[in-house]
Amino acid sequence: MTENDREIFGQLMALLSATFREPMNAFRAVAYWHALADLPIETVRCGVEQALKTCRFFPRPAELRDAAGAGVPDASLIESLLLEHLRRPGGERMTPTEPFLRLVVERLGGIRAAGNLSTEDRLDVLGRLVPALVHAAGVRRIPLPTEAALDAPRRLALGGNRPEEP
Image 1: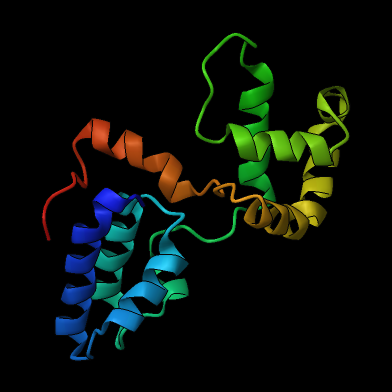
Image 2: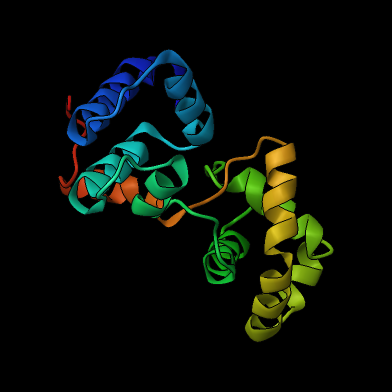
């Protein structure tokens, strides 16, 4: 999220507060902002909408992330992004997942080593590397790729889940 998303975020938190009849104060709002700040506002909105449909109690930030499909990336998601990255011509513009993929390639021993692994071997290594990748990305303030974040532009292009005021 960006500073421009604070008003919409506040409205989403107020919606949760009213629906679940729990108070929303400044400290709680700041805590939720920090816990969800790495997600696009559209992903947060999807999480809130899903929580309104499925939760019985005021959702914690982790529950909003899960509801939006924005949990920790798994090895298969990283593998598919890595394959797409390896197949892309070097001159194309940088993608939103580029910093994370650079980290992945670095941890795999470089672009040649990553490209020389079989899909099965790469998935095995990535499965073991996920916790370290998540930690390193957090330390470096690199956003994690998520199914929800990667899917949002496609949904918007198809006219689904358009950003609207809550």
